[in-house]
Image (cartoon, rainbow, N blue to C red; front, side, top):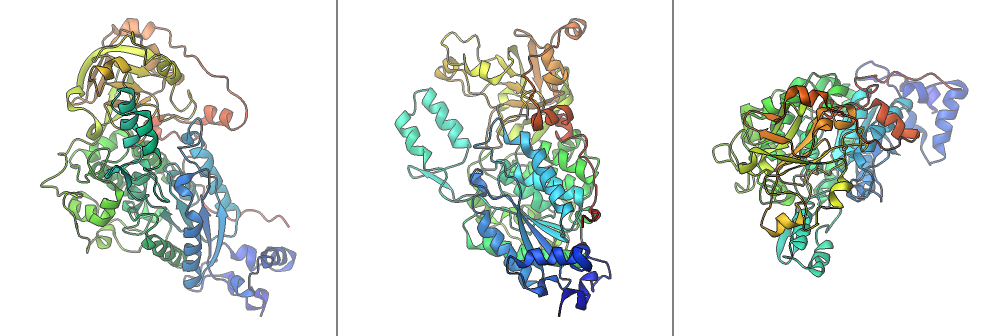
Length: 584
């Protein structure tokens, strides 16, 4: 019997609501003919057009994004789950962003990927979507697009790699790269040893093994109720990851049948939970800019200051690099996000709904911590409350800046020192190894022109290498300030996301070499000790790279500042999933 004869595609029998896909697949005449006929060329059966939920599988697989290189296999498992639940899966590619290969920075293209996801979802006969992502920018980009469309949505992240191994010891993505490279510069490690380590850190498919941005965003997606419980930490190559993909596909069909959309799951409490969990896991500073962008898409008021406020009473519980000792494998085996949620208890909003149809508290009710050295208790934390990502304001950051306290040196958190200012990261690295480099241990290194507009794209350059002459003298950390970002795998006393950025006329543009800078984390201040009238009258003109046309022009003209999430001004908010006009 043909789809036209059954007529069942016209509506959802469980809710009485028409499915979006019915406008395509239940249509009569030439329009319905073309929509169905073209899919027959892939060997589809007529039964696929009988009114079952059509689930998009948004796949950010790419060989140019190593972290996402295994998502083809997960897509097949997700499609299997959709079919088992009586749905019709249609996989489609999204652009993919990998920080390891992409220049000048994957962050430049996060908003473009979000646009890709949003417009693809809205333009096609989809009733719901499974988002497949891994590398750190791909997770927020897909979520940003999906939140603006507001179809039933569930995400599956790709999972971390197996632990790196070097000379009998665990070695973490990013974190050990930074330390090894400093060891080479200091003469403690040979180039040959450095080369030998190169092939030892990435032992399997998956994203970074530390609590970097990819791991952080996977964990925050889970606690916000947009992915299945326990899914964030399972290694990419574990068979459980494929089972999770199948379960995610099944659940996507059920979400459509229940008409359960992100707007019914996400509110202010969801972002408060994310900020609190970020503190408990020692999460990346990049979570701040991504969550701010997501709040803008979800139409939730969650200003920069809220990250600090929500984290104030949350201790660091997860003992992972770069803030602790272990890696994501141990975190998984210790109990993962559900165990942390259970340990935090009433410190989280347990009554928030999730994609399971249950509350966050219900999802973690049977969770257990299996290794107390990896997931610590609130009574015996890795670090006490107040050592998470702090938000600073002051003369140099009127709209805010952030610093990751758990990865910083305590003795530098109240520091006064002379600024040494560079207008680009290239300018800094051209001279930082000179034996006469004009810096001492108390110098405050400043690189500006690295914000959303200035670079463009807000790159991860904040964890500047220590000048060689100071490294040779035993200096291992210095105060560093930038309007850019740093990798979530990085460590050090680094002030990031200074807003407004120098290229947007922010006060960092008026800072001069020799000015005394005061970092006072206890008071949440970042100030300059210069007469205010003199400082205000200084020229704030900054060198600017030529702005070519195309996407970079669009980015520079419409990107917001870091404290609002660096999203495009015209993309904030929901635009829904109204069915587009017909074209036949």
